[in-house]
Length: 446
Image 1 (cartoon, rainbow, N blue to C red):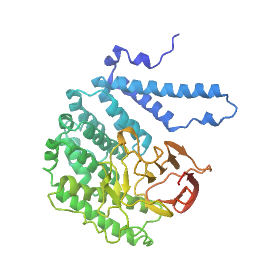
Image 2: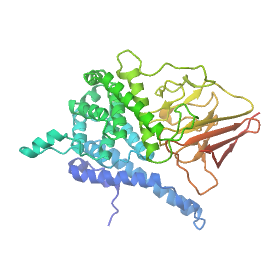
Image 3: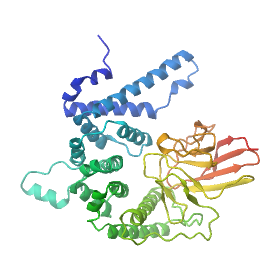
Image 4: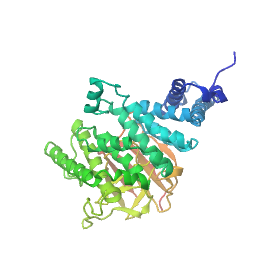
């Protein structure tokens, strides 16, 4: 019997597949890609295997991943397949997985351009996932309207929906984004942002989605029909009050501009969420939805010896009023250098992480290449090296150097990353919360 693989799916009959069957194929292919990407080649450490066997197994893994990706690309070329992909991702995406987010961005970026008719149906598909149609009549229908369509929607679905809208609104800014937008989308996003009882991450990603939609002028006008200035000012005030409450419940540690770091646990998680929402609300007020006034404080540079250089950076950073707080809400790596360089001696700086996920922090010369769309930043060429907060590795010349220990540390919000640069001896060592993980790289320095 001939082997059945992805080539069967690529036949012209794919357009006739039912929506449900197509969704099943997409989900299986998506899970296959993530399984291969998130699990390392453990057989590489098996000394009992020959080099030939290792090469064959590596080839099989790569071929399987390529087939799964080709299946996703092929199905998304068809209108029904594209909508099935959107529906499946709304249901299954793990937004906390950097690998999943990277592949989602890659597939959306590389897939064929959807038709106007397809794009006009995308948000309906997402909203259908968020809230099934209400009862057609009777008391249940009235109760449904009074309680709100999304009150019982799982948080994961709302996060996935806002993530998809963010990616699509930025990718298709212009006429297609107008088709993606609707009054129902606006009511959902503004409503989630304004609701103090909503999950903090849902509120944050709703604001980010609104920012991305605002890249399209006609949609921005529709968003501004809501009182965004008042909403953002209220959110910022709420975050300030929450920060004060958490401060009173936390040991004081006058190390960072934030004034304190709460102890590990729910309090730190809540603190990190409010810090993020506050930063984004102030930035959105000043740069996207404001009325000409500034919500963020003016920069006080009197005590700064160095800060981030906005003129030596890629263009999509959200920089806070201190000049030291940074955030990136794009699917690509953004890069930035500081205003001060060093040539000799020993230097040390610390960074307080306010989010989870992948960040690369370190040192770079002025020759270090910053090219987000091509994947180049600090640690990706010979002109710099950086610590990877997600994989606990040091990147130098595009290669990862892992610690000589089985203990894998994955940094999270509230962790402190320290970087010690010894230019006299050509060494750089990284610390996580003051602990040396054996992450030292050597370099030539005249």
